[in-house]
Length: 313
Image 1: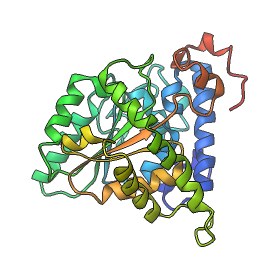
Image 2: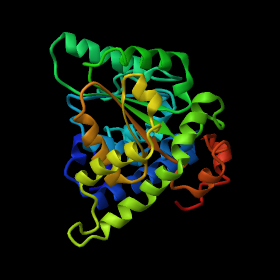
Image 3: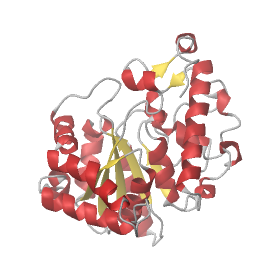
């Protein structure tokens, strides 16, 4: 399947990991080509390609709702929700908006710009769902920079007080806002990411399991459950703040590993109440120059793009 054939995100269902990787490459190519020509945000969207594909594999987007925080993370979302063919109109008059826009698509559930709004919006939708007796999943995606905002912290405080309200928060942790993050919350997240036992589990457990003859190179969902349990035993303080605030914490997981993302999201959907999945990503992923200069390639104008559009992914 080619990216241009995707008019509905549910068309991703049933695709193999290899097919999803091809879609991911096409998203990055289209993203880069468009921003090079017309300008726009570059690094944020490149960093959430696998996160978006993995998450949408586990949802029914005819019913379930995904709320994106800071809309320029959502370029991949736009490309797989029927806007590929007119994506070249990005940020132009009467064209595709640079942020989420409810009147633009049935899949844009909240008009997100800047910032820290997705958990509040998602919690409101989840509470309304429960009051109306409806059944669908609500997912709020938020970056580690936006997590420092007062509205996000207020929403976490509220959600943790509602233990029977199912809400999935996906924390896209790339250690960046426009520039590197500062403050106590980023410092705490960094400790989680760099914990030596956590690094050992993340780097070694999967490789050892994949080498077993009965596994065959693919990590089964059961191993993801075991790994989450081992993380809790090995590093009791991992996610302790979120757990104390009433969330079931999972992570950190590799935000560019589709197998791990899909397995973890499936597991998260099975847990009742508020759940936070901590996903470690790289801003500008897949485009080496943007990975190396994450501040400079946060966004680009068409004039600036002449310096980089010839570089291959």
